[in-house]
Image (cartoon, rainbow, N blue to C red):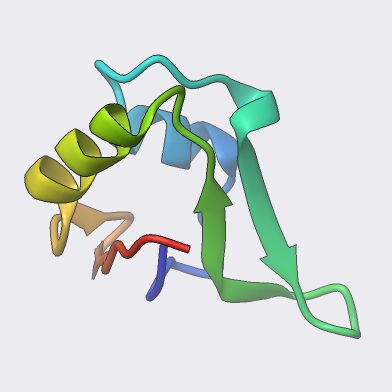
Length: 73
C-alpha cells in the first residue's frame, strides 16, 4: 500500500480491507528511522487470488482521506 495517511493505524487498514480474510498479524505498518510512520504498509493475503481481488476492488480507493495505491510486492 502506498499513500497511506500517516495517522492511519492497523485498525484503519483492517477496516479498509473489510470483507477480506486478514487480521492484525497480516498487516505491517512501516516506520522511518525516527519511528515515524511512512506512507506505506504491507498486507499479506491468504492467497494470490485474494490479493488480486483486493487490488481490483480497493486500488485508488479512499482511506483516512487519501487515495491509496495498491501493488504486489
